[in-house]
Image (cartoon, rainbow over all chains, first blue to last red; front, side):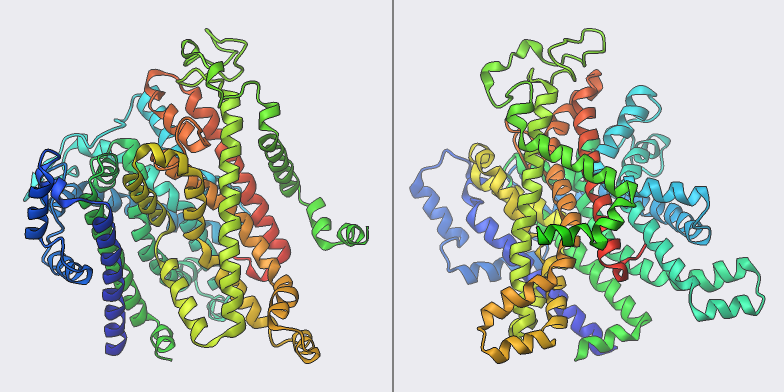
Length: 324
Length: 305
């Protein structure tokens, strides 16, 4: 087990180094740190001096090593637009995104598991058919369209819910939270519902498929034969074994969810990391772009590694398969 | 004629005729395809021709509404272009990018898959590791990043000219492992069969065995993936365009039309977003339904959920 964990962590570090290399090349090729520092009105000779001082004329690999060293220390360079360390800018925006993802994850769990189980237990009932039909259409519906439809009905027509921004936030030890005010919670509803709409069909189908598979197995038949109560067979015996694949997929999808926040945040003007990323694109703020790439890379790699290790604990087959 | 007869008696056609969902999806998709191919002929206006556009017509609602103009059946967009024509051309762009991206990724993926499966060994494990890495990264975020970087690198003007080929290549590249894995798995299954051995014994070259003998037998799963992948590619393109990282508004795809319309939804001009949105959902839905059906028919074992 220990060897497995070490192997997974080394793999994660390699992936991070590659992501770092990509980020570094981008910065190296597109960004101009001298311009970021002094602007356009400095003579070429002075620029050259600054370039030398900053070590921009060093060989490529030395600069890369320096880049990695700085990155490990948390220094991802200065944002051209904000004139602040890029990491600081991103961390200031992170709470908004994290809260959005948390609420989305909650909606996913609360909705997908019961409806998936229901659709598996009663595959022929009209309600299951509706669930499956809606989830088919849901797959075909791009998230920004769902968001726009929600905004149009609940924001513009009915005027029930606010459709942009985060509303009132409370500062808790430097964490701008929208969880503790009614206004902040109201602002969370539409973005999180539309963000969860991408993953819901997938999860409902997954839970349903896994549950149906488990219900066919021998041990469930045995449980029926023993005369156990229906509730017990379904919710205690069968459900437990559907959870494992669901948890794995959930972990992997959490990383993907971060990607989709870019879309939802754009629609809802949600002041999170994704929104900041697109602003950085518009402003050609290369340092911030690269910093975002690395932060998202870290999130993704860490989540994936943890999920893999947990999975390794639960399912020994994975550990052994890797050693060959 | 012979192959037509074979098709007529095939299980594929038999099950197609029994599945109303498949028939409807196919018809809708065929109509949309024909419309997009014949766009310059069918569309009431040529929206790429700036001479026909009058900014005074901007935001005209659909004909049946108050203030509607009978020249514009579905109204106009913010630049005064006929919305129906813009949508037809947008459909064309979306389909072109979707199909182009899938052709590109299937070419790369099939090539990698067949080489990997046929030769095996170190090359195989290297290529498959590569596919694993690519697979573990969410494709949409890869595409968003790459497009963003190109946008910053090229500047907006040149980026807009290059958007179409770039979208095809990037969406294509982010999805090739699907094909590589499937094809490799089929090749591994096929390569030890007797007909391959027979071909070897006769002394046919390796390339010929690979591409003429094994490749056709791996095409069934490729066909199934391709339909789903076209839908995926169209969706990715729409998402990228919606973020402003895809097609420019002068040559809009459905995604960029929705983006343009979204800014005006609060002022009540819902049709600019609504009609392209509906068209996009119908397009994707139809392709997905057709893909589901194809998967069930061609590969009952794969079916899950």
